[in-house]
Image 1 (cartoon, helix red, strand yellow):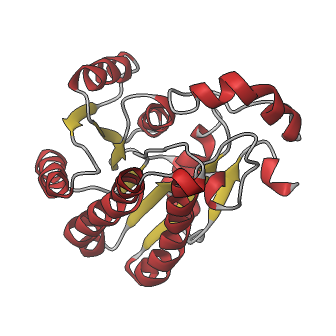
Image 2: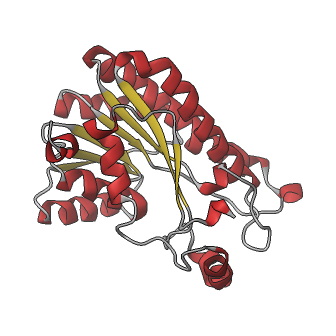
Length: 258
């Protein structure tokens, strides 16, 4: 294969959870631009409709599915609907996530449970279903987990206090490693993208109060933008990453090297 062929996703199908906006929509755009058919999921139909219209303007074949990844009973019907529509799923991007800010000593248990359900249990169940029904039988697959630099380290409490988010994203990083070890023999790679701070609905409040501190802390003195995940997402979804698995790759302007 030449380099263009290694990165070509024509004929591939991809699920991107939380794909109606933010980082998920950015990843859906990238995979679609390289030829993949895209199924995005989110909780709100109106946001999904807007995202599909946006993708179709770029000549990307996209469908939308309402699914709350935090609700266990919703996951199998969602997965089956995509499999029925596409016939297979080659690429699974577990992007949907939730966060909660509170001092550790006051963090509500119900918020902890919510983050475990969305950031870990939902990822496990959807990956298990797609792996068993499509990727393992095909002997090929790409699982991309969108974790966070919060899963690689503790964080300055002047910026955020997110004990459950850090814990669940750290769990997702090691879920990535453990699954990569189990599924490598099936031709399936499993990797994690760990974004730093990107402007989004989830980070709006934090960036509004501590954005300058975050920029000063980051070697490149910038935040992530609408294109900074695209190249890595395509690499990890393509044949070019056949010998990369079990990795957690930070996209953070160097913030985690200090």
